[in-house]
Length: 237
Image (cartoon, rainbow, N blue to C red; front, top):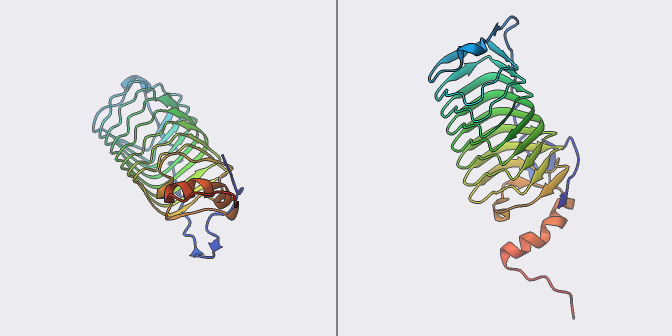
């Protein structure tokens, strides 16, 4: 385990120059949103504009290609919801929970996700732009071949997230636990890991080029990096 460097390091300069911090979403939800009628269910390719979903059970919902604009989902259940190709824009998800949510090739833009408890979320090929994930815990998040730009993870726990083949640009991890991420084939630019409270490296350590780490993290990662380079570290005779 690599110990973290603590909070509040995003955007500070290093010997290699300024680290570009991610741009955070700025939400302006409707003052008087329309409350969604749970009995109606979700539909494929439907548009949901200015709705508020409160403690709605959306388990097994079939809504591929749906668009959620200026929506708030509060305390909703999303078990096995199928949202392939959906668009979540200028929206808030708070205290949502679910297993096996399908968001393949979805678009999340200007979205805040807070205190979520999710497992096995399938976001392969998704596009995340100006997204804030604050608090909560997400297990086995699949972001393979996805694109993350201006994404902030703050105070959350990520267990074995899969970034295989993904592109991460201006992504920060502040006061987070990052456990065994898979970075195989990933491309990183301005990815700030200095604020991690706990970091357990997984596969693809060789893809950390483009990330920013603290001196203390470098010391702890040194054996792994040496192994990737084929360097043997041995005591002097």
